[in-house]
Image (tube, rainbow over all chains, first blue to last red; front, side, top):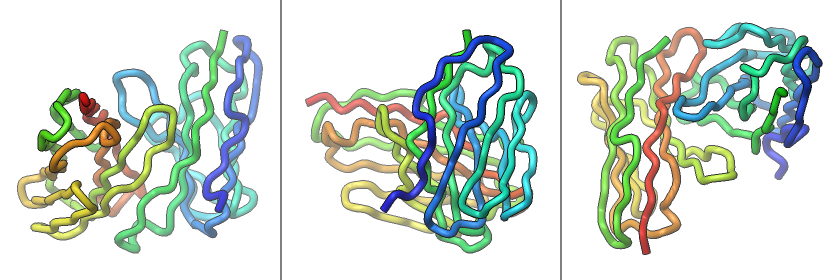
Length: 115
Length: 112
């Protein structure tokens, strides 16, 4: 029962470097989400996807790009990392929210530090 | 963006005490509300999904109620135990925009 798996779990980057965070789910969920969590703030949605090949902007999309080439994977990219992107990143997946009673399933998070 | 408020921000209770906290959200276009339990160094786990005005859900010593007309939900914990220590998040869903908006959570510490 893997559920939602995020890799890597920790990463330290220098300003200007790029990297990709990978999220994989094995529950055949249509919806996938990337959030960031900062001290004193709730989980804030960066980007989300409602199905393979689709992506959409969330509340705080600037500086990030995403891709959903396969239904089970959702990638979050930082093209040119900035210190303001230091955060803990969570991926989540769910069935279609319109099907009531379906919660989001979260990965364990990726702690990213930008120096 | 949905304005979601949770109160109190943090709470310390003695083992055995009962406690409750509030999630407030705009009542217009309400579709569903999720409650999550988030332990330190772990990922959020779903507690309840609530959809109908007047809904009451229960899981062991934890229960929740929902008032969609006035825009609030209460989470109750009866006879708190140290293992209940966690942050409790609520996330309303409007049914359009495909987005959940999370509150900042209520951090509960149960003192043995």
